[in-house]
Structures are given as C-alpha cells and as structure tokens.
Image (spheres, helix red, strand yellow):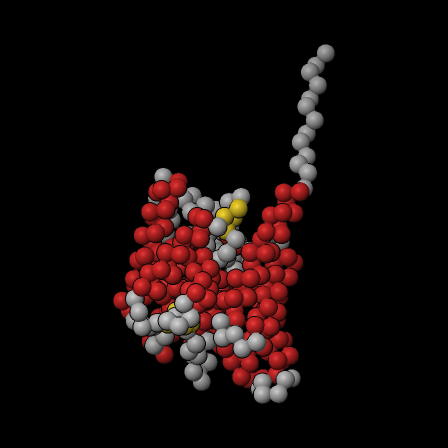
Length: 286
C-alpha cells in the first residue's frame, strides 16, 4: 500500500517528476486501487460484499481521524486511510462482520503505535491482514480469486500501475519482485508435483496487484536507496518461496510481515550509528 504522509497528521506527497500528474500525487494511489476494485468486481465479483467493504473503509477513516486528533491535534489527509480500508475490505474473506472492523482499526492503529523515529515498521494493511490471518485462521481467509483466463483486466491494471509507480520512481521495486517471483516459481517447479504454470498463476490475481503496487512500494515502510530496496524486495520473494514450500497459503503477506520490519530496523540502526558532522564554529574576527 502506498502511503504518502510523513506523519499521520502532516501529509507530504511523494515527489514525482515535474508534470507527472495533473492532480495531487497523494490521490494517485486511491484512484489506482479503486480502479483495481472496479475491474475485479465487475469482471469477477471479487468483493465479499459491498457493505462490508464500505464498513472497512469507514472504520479505517474514522480511526485515522480520531487518532490524528488525539496524537497530533490535526485533521489528517485521508488518502492513506482510504487505501488501507479498501485493501482490508477486498483482501479478507469471512462470513462475519467484526473482522472487517477489527482489521481496519488494527491497520491504522499500527501507524501510530509501531513507529520508531517517525517511521512505520510495517505497512499498515499488511500488518492488519497478517495479524488477522495468524490469530483468527478459523474465521478469516484471504482473497484467492484469479482474473480468469482473460488477460485484459490484468493488462489494464499492470499498464496503469506500472506507469504510476514509474512516475513515482518506484517501478524497480515492483520489477525486482515480479522477476524474483518468476525465478522462485521456476525453482519450485523443479520439485515433483509443482507445475510451473501453477506456481506462476497466483501473481496474475487481484491479490498480487494490490500487493505489488501498494504494499511493497509503501514509502513509509520501505528502506531508502535503489539497491537496498531491491535487496529487501528480493528477500521478501525468497521468504515467500520458503513459506510456499511449507504449504502456507498466506505466504506473500507473512513474507512481507517478517522481512519488512527487520529491514527497517536495520536501516534505522545504521543511521543512528553514523556520526553527525557539525561545522566548526567560525572564529570571531580579531
């Protein structure tokens, strides 16, 4: 999930190339995720239900507003909360209502509680969904539906999503993950009973579109620097491969949940050890 605020109460847009967007770049992520939702719903009916998805969005927004006023005494920009809410509403499956409320609240709460030096350790929606899948597996599952046998929905989303993240200078993150996923799918296909196309198929589904364009590219929960970002996202794909080999059906969520905060903590630790160079005071004129 792409979130743009530098703090929940003082949003700062992620910088893009001049003239990249005719609108505020903070609205790009909500527009793209809404497009994915519309295409997926009208093509294949990926939503559990309209009311429950709207409930997750509403709970996410209300929680964001309440916590921002409580902590920062300011009204927040709601783009991040909307993306978190819609991600939670789309990606979980359950016949109950309360998981949609809880996953949205936990996701936003993690932004305010699990922070070190102003940084999120986890992507909010990844934290909320992973927590629910781990703690309540008997009543909560994740979306597993594919786009079907037609390529047009996937091509539309991938084209627009790629253009957007390229303009935001984060396309390399998506590209390295996709290439790593394909490579590890080929590695898994060498094992008996693991056909290559069966291992490759999940990346064409709506789950992975949200995962690729929003969760792993979130500026507030990714490390800085081109090569460190590539290394981390490769590690996420590697961890996912290991989890898939153990039969874990929620492998992408748990892989990012495990790798992401470790990478962030390592970067925070390295930055805190760097000496701060201060200029020598100027001598007073004689």
